[in-house]
Image (cartoon, rainbow, N blue to C red; front, side, top):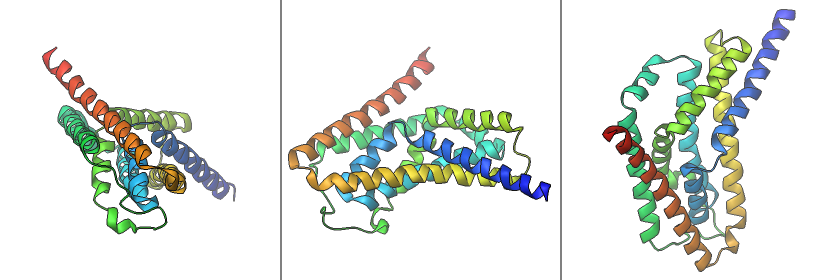
Length: 222
């Protein structure tokens, strides 16, 4: 009986820890947050959530690499780190330029709701942005490693699976809340405000992308 209670308690601790890690990884303002806000403004709740789902999958992959000690994923990230970062940087620059030169429109009017299937194309893009973000890679590794040290390691595949699922759940909660918030207030946006949001989002994404590319150049020519 005591063993069973201990297992349940351990599972609850892992779920709570995983939810916290997922929220902490998703919440800081970064490229994906900017994209989710912009997509939610233009396409409503489902547009924003679709962008967030790509980040959820990326967080899940990074969490799995740490929780299951999947050396292959870590080795690939380390071996092709510059290439992966360059891809992410170029993608961010492309997103930024597109937002700056494209006339902003609400593809889905505020009084209408689209379907998530209409926005599936953004999912692989935000997934790539998540797994090519050096901060996300290092942050997830540090959090998973710190949690493992705190609780004495993940002893079974089931514990690792629970943690990964909880991390993805925490990340998903953030994107659900953010998408719903933006979808709720988007009807108040005028054309000028929409244009301002697109310009700010474009400049932020462009800045992130250029920073990633410049960082690679500095390391290469050092």
